[in-house]
Length: 314
Image (cartoon, rainbow, N blue to C red; front, side, top):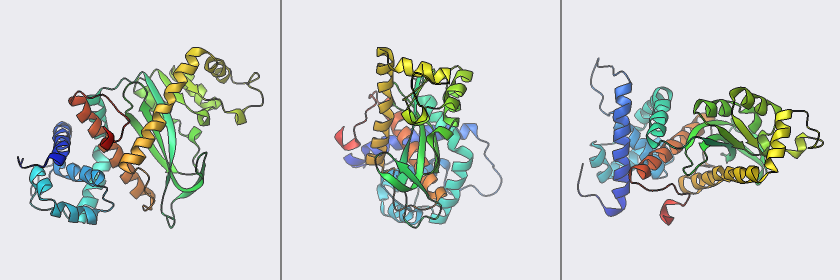
């Protein structure tokens, strides 16, 4: 790696070091096919380029190819003479997303080691291009009707707010239909799951009871005639718990996921109104969240505390 790195690029150099370490762990987990010609670009180089795409706000693989070829320092650091072709990026990114994305997430979360005792679930609207034929019409409390998609997210809710699992759906999918988030929380060993009123339904409380997970949701007044006469005993118990000081204090932790969405939209441009197509939006979201996890691992290694502040305000 070159020593002639400009001061403003030093942080990205550190990030590349973290990517290198994670891909080394990943390479040991996967079986390498040694037949045929050796690959021109290794796993580290491709993942580094895809993270570069996120950090530079690059929208397409054609632009990525052009920008990398113009960036001599980046090419020196990752050890390439020229950028991979845009079609090669498309091919390799599909392979990584299909075969290795889950392993990358697992390695990052394991190395970050966040406190998973409390988890939070919520969704955020993502508007897409007006001519996106795959987008759906949805409604959100702050922006009203919109055309696009929804990101449903499970994250930790203690000092570090770390994404654990996410699902992208059409904008018309209701939050309460994403029960997989609850099962994933149980799989991560979460003891408490917090959610807003959109998840206040008997199905979620019944599943949480079966999994022996404490589920705390905001009160959905439209889903009941009288809060003193709720048929589901778990929902009734939740209402009484939210009226206690302990319940109020615990439920306040739920706003952390909203602050995370704000950071992802403000710093990483999570919502991209130029994108169209479910697969393109999903790839875009996946790499933003993976990049966020890489950066949180870097903060961990540097001994820095988690912060909702944007990068330029830290």
